[in-house]
Image 1 (cartoon, helix red, strand yellow):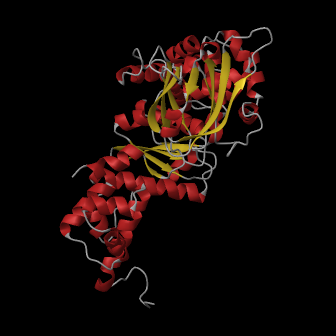
Image 2 (cartoon, chains in turn green, blue):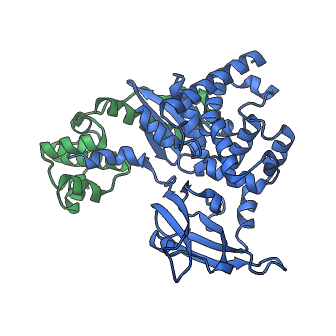
Image 3 (cartoon, rainbow over the protein chains, first blue to last red):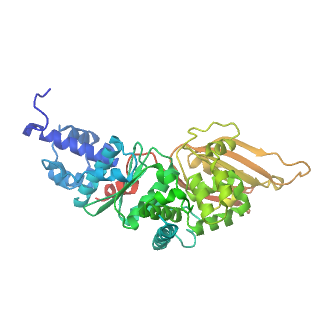
Length: 118
Length: 341
């Protein structure tokens, strides 16, 4: 196990960070690894390896993936994806906004923000 | 909020709904009798449509950097999701601010004028009215009543209201409110109908057959009157086909098409002919369930087995499975970029 604190990932972990972001973006919109693999023309294990940071992603593949996941390339490669304003203001419109629901709205706000640039 | 303001809100919502139906061509001949495809309509406005499991919220309309989006809770039945979708589409079309909605939106009738509504902000009233008119425009109620041969008196039976709601693509209560709005039924009958539990209506059609998921699945009672209907069904729905069969003249319904389309037949029988009517048509009664997602046009045939092409009667149904419990982006929005090179 790495003893490095979170948020200070060195260059060796960049592939893992990228892979994790790609996995999250794929799962968020509900695509399967298999569908993505077919789209890229690579074996299904290729997508799995990319998401685990075991296989590097070519620039062309990354461009295709960003388009597929409806986000800008920088969303995956940037240090910090742009975070939209807090959605807490929506709390006043619904009588009870649970923490879970608020997080779901926050993720959707992030998706819309990224999609507007993707 | 005063009655006058309330009326203005309802009128604004109604006008926007009927205007959008017109712009999308959903009020034309041929479309008038079909339930309004609200998810497709959202897609056509260019907004992102997301389905996610949530706790208390039914849905929300949001906007970020000019990108509009609607999110819906997959943990709710399809009729409720469609109503929420229409309510959020109302916020979008009426250019309201972003809004999150819980089940408060279900407890308000679209037109009922009472003290409780004074507490509802005008934008909510507009979105409520929009949803009501968009999902259930007057022409859809009128057209469905015509093809089914229903008069106002038929809606004193909750069974008919339930079957109407499936064809409208609304919840049971949504259909009740819509019928009251169009003055097909009165406030007294509305109150009485709303006491009915749709679950008991579903089980009543099944003759003891278990229903896989009583809260979410529906039972479609289909007859010859549904010729050409769009049957947008949930994955666990059951289909009770009751079709007149001219057995005296040797005609029988064949259901090979059902098998081919992915249905399994759970029960097959004929209803007893009343005494003294020997040779009269019988009613064939089939209970079927889909084994896989449907996306087909079914053409069932009643013919004489020895001469199948001689004057067969047919029943055409456009069957489609609505996957309302799958999380992720609306299917078309998810797949459109997969298809592109």
